[in-house]
Amino acid sequence: MKNKQYYVYILGNISRTVLYTGVTDNLIKRVWQHKNELVEGFTQKYKIHDLLFYEVYSDPESAIEREKQIKSWNRGKKEKLIMSINPGLVDLYEQLIG
Image 1 (tube, one colour):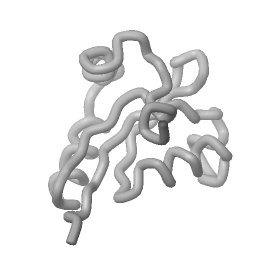
Image 2 (cartoon, helix red, strand yellow):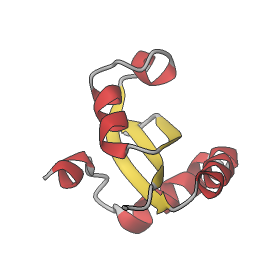
Image 3 (tube, one colour):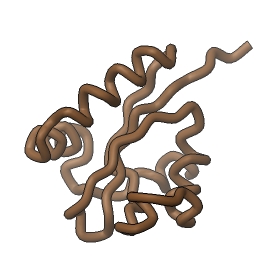
Image 4 (tube, one colour):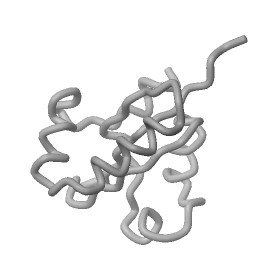
């Protein structure tokens, strides 16, 4: 049986001026929902569709703890984290589904 995975992710809008941090157990589905504006609220209002960063965890507690940690950071620290794996600020979603 495959072990369940949990993801902490950061999305951005097209101009990369707004960031959103979340957690999920199905990253492809969740990003698709954001891209199609099926998630009401902040991400829908600010058109936050592009996956800029994600990390994988084997247990939900660790993923939730990390999400809270990242959410507490200032924007500069979040940008540094994103740039450490995605310096071009490209949408990583296509890599996930391709």
